[in-house]
Every structure is written in structure tokens, then in C-alpha cells.
Amino acid sequence: MDNETGGREEFVVLDRISVREKRFVLIVEGKRGSTGEARKQCLLAMKDCWDNNDVMKNGKNDDVGVLYGFVTTGEDWWMIRYDGSTFVMTHKFIIVFETMGKAKEMWLEKYSIVVDCICYALGDGGIMRKDMVVG
Image (cartoon, rainbow, N blue to C red; front, side, top):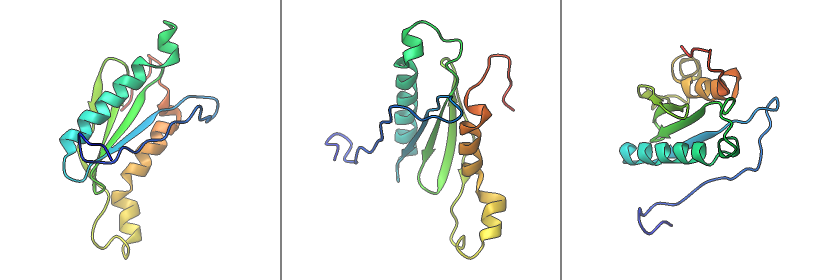
């Protein structure tokens, strides 16, 4: 329990995740009531990850890639992209609705965007070359 915020600090530290020998960072920050607080914590965590990246410490930032973060209330989600200088955040997308247990096809068609975003971040979009454009 965090005495300052009253919430639980939950995190996982992994030495290395290998997906086709590329490094990926995904940060998910969840708050039930305060998306502003979750967004602030996510942005700070992303900046801290970037600043403490071993490649950056060595002064070689050619292939650092992009960091992806997610802010969520559990129901509402936002995806954030950080390239070391600019944060870009999506509009809110909703992935949970009351009858989703009975409407699997509707969920897959309209609400599974968070799965697509995570797959994108872990796919070829996870490490960006400077000459690539993300649409």
C-alpha cells in the first residue's frame, strides 16, 4: 500500500523480453477514479524508462525505438506513444460493456481495439525507424 496515494504499487521488472531479438516496453497504468492521475504516472514512467535506457546512457539513440503506454479505468483505455521527445495519445476507446459476455462477435468487431494496439506495439510498430510514418 502506498501511503501517499492510498493505492497499491504494482509492477513487474523483467531483465529482458525477446521477441525477434527486439526490445519492447509497454507500460499500463490503471486507476478506477482518476484518469488524470493515471495519465500523469504513465507519462512519468515512460519518460523515466526512456531516460534510463542503456542505449541512451551510451549516447547511441539511433535504434532506441518507441515506448508505448496505456492508461485505463478498466473500461476506458487510451494508448500513448513516446519517441523520446513527443508524447502522442489516442482518443478514449471503450472495451467493456454490460452484455459483452453474451455478445462475443460484437466485442471482437467493435471493442477489441486494445488487443490490436498491444499487438501493434509488440509487432513491427514496436521499434520504429526514423523514416517510418505511423498512421
